[in-house]
Length: 280
Image 1 (tube, rainbow, N blue to C red):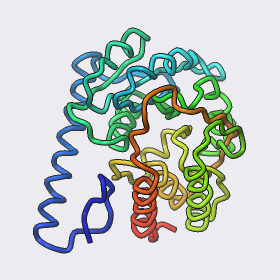
Image 2: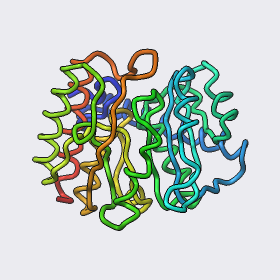
Image 3: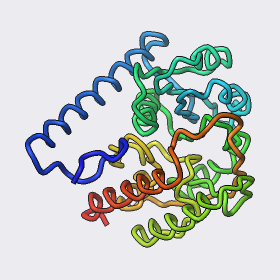
């Protein structure tokens, strides 16, 4: 079986050449992540954040991310909020927009995928003393003014990890294929994890820092499924909160065409389930 399907790790290499490709990919990933952390520290010094870190992974979203950053609250329930953007390669001037908004950023020298960018952000947030991390998309489909309601169950001690749900809230998009995928993959992940989540492919989520210290993350893309399955298999309490899902503000999705996106997402689910069965 192939090692990678569009950046998705799937299965283990069975040949010597496959193992060499895996080692090279792992070494490249580690190098790029290390360069990104050094990029951050060279600009700001050692990480130091407020208790809540709003983390945004961005790839060629200069036209959208400015409005997203403006909507991030300064405080949630009396806790200070820091905004961290991990720029996943690209040369569209996102750095200037982030700096102008007063947020901090780290830059990957090449595009590696949202999963890699988020892992850099998680590492920086944990090193900087964050107690809670909220992830928001850079394309305007999530509304950062809803961060307090997504984080509320975590702050109240009712959940360790909360996923936003467009199905419990309002979905303003019109892609029937994607909507069907949300239903199908939520059913599959719930069957695997014994959860009752309605929207398992939503990148808008809030979690305690302890979750990030214990889960196993290795996917370059489509990390939401991996994060949910890994967290559930380790006994963390999962919840959800209703939110509004907007059409992207401008541009096109980086996730690929619907069929390819669906296949890749399914590959992440299968691989993560096989890997995590020992924890269930």
